Length: 242
Image (cartoon, rainbow, N blue to C red; front, side, top):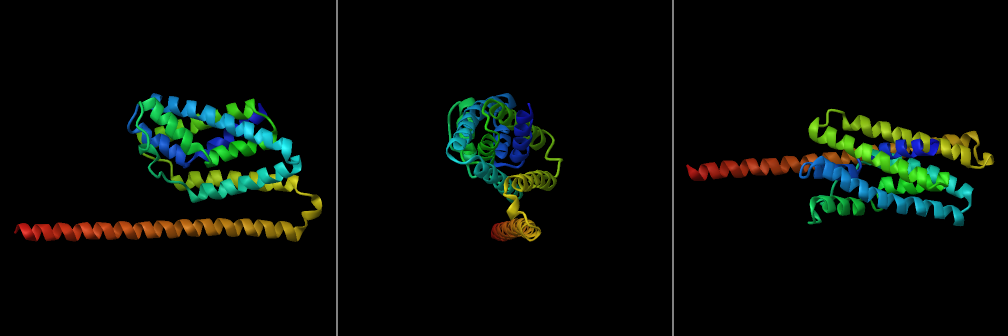
């Protein structure tokens, strides 16, 4: 039960603002919510089964201490990924099956290599278990995507996206730091080394925030240019009519 709860919580956090949550929200504007959630469930069951089997298999070929260190470091990476955010790149328009199969196929392929799938691999490697993690991560995906559909489509995103991102990212990074502290040899955990590691993480967070700010600034400039161009075009047409 502890493994199930841990898997559930971490996948809920990882899915907040993730590409697959955005995909579920996009599909919910076109198909009934029940159809979307059914497609998400089938795709997640298959995708995360592959992930937990892979994570469990890794423990047979990589020393357990190495797995623990890699899994803990990966959670810090997932925290930074959460801060960076995701966006859709046409995944909701690639397939033309029935509504259920469109959602299931698109979601399955969108989840391949995604943050939540990689988090599932890391959890399976860390806890060396299959069924509790498979069920926990699948339940987490369903709750997070149902929440995304309700908030994004019905309630109009009343919960600030920035707060959700920072909360989830903080949990991931703290969990990763605690895991590294438990897994690394104590001879390496000198005060200067720990201070340097924490400083490095802070610098990475600052870099991601700066990159996000730059990306938003560039996007705002593009939007302003397009809007200005449309306004000028509209004025020119108006004069032509006169």
